[in-house]
Every structure is written in structure tokens, then in C-alpha cells.
Image (tube, rainbow, N blue to C red; front, top):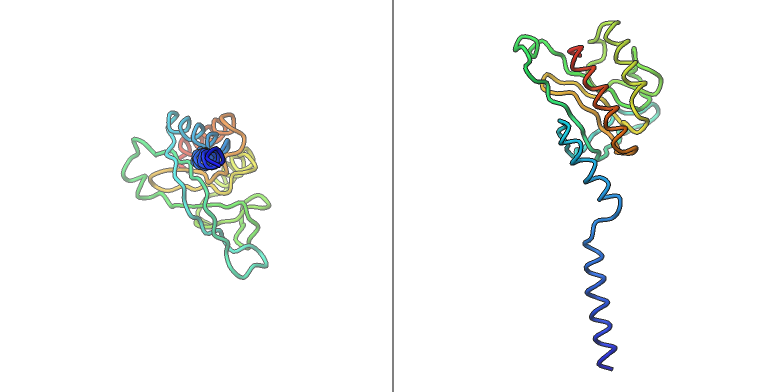
Length: 168
């Protein structure tokens, strides 16, 4: 009987330790986020309200990881003149100038034709699990579900740097 109690207690302790151990997915995310910070990203978990999709009554709200690059050494006048915009991978009514399946959350009709063309190129180059792309006077970023590993992280950084270089 004593052995049974000892085994039960040991199993309980081992079970508790296993419960607090990170899962393989959590280990992957921690490694990816650490790598992202090393190459200049600011990484945050954010709650995002998507634009109302076609045919939906209520917009969807989701928690997703934001990967952002800070706009460095920017002229104050350029920063003040910058009009923020956000595009989402969702079919909605506000989709003027964007590829099919994408829509505006903020900033529709604020970009010029050449800027829209460049944004379309960047959207098409982004991984399929990028939920949104945003640009503000302070930073540019993506909302990403973190599939594809460091190769996709490098691709995202390259595309965001194109936005920074174009002051878009």
C-alpha cells in the first residue's frame, strides 16, 4: 500500500512538471521571436479587430503576433506628413487598389498609383500566413502567425525594408 501511495505522488509530481514545460510550438515561437529581436524587429502579441468581411454582421477579433521595424533617422516633416495605413488579408468592401483577398483597415485612397503598385508587389511577396501589413509614422509591421521559420522571417524583413526605403 505504501508503494502505491509513493507511485501516485511521484506520478502527480511528474505530471505537474510536464504541465509547466513548454510545448514544441512554444519553443519554436520563443526561438523565432528571439531571432527576430536580434535582427531588429520589435515583437508583440496584439489583439486585432479585422475589417468586417463581405457578408458578415460583426468584425472578427483575433490575437496575433506583430513584427515591426522602427523608422530610424526620419525627418520630422516626413513623419508628420506620413498617413498611416493598414491592409488585411480579408475580402471586404474597402479593397480599392489592392490584390484580391485583401482590404483596407485604414488609409484607403491615401496612396498614389505607384505606391499602390509597390504595395501590391510587397503583398504578393509576403508569406500566406501574414494576416495584415501596417505602416505608421513610427514603424512598419506585419501581423503574422509565425509559420515557415527564419526563412519567412528574412522574407518579411526584406519586404518591410522596401516599405521603409520607399517611405511608404
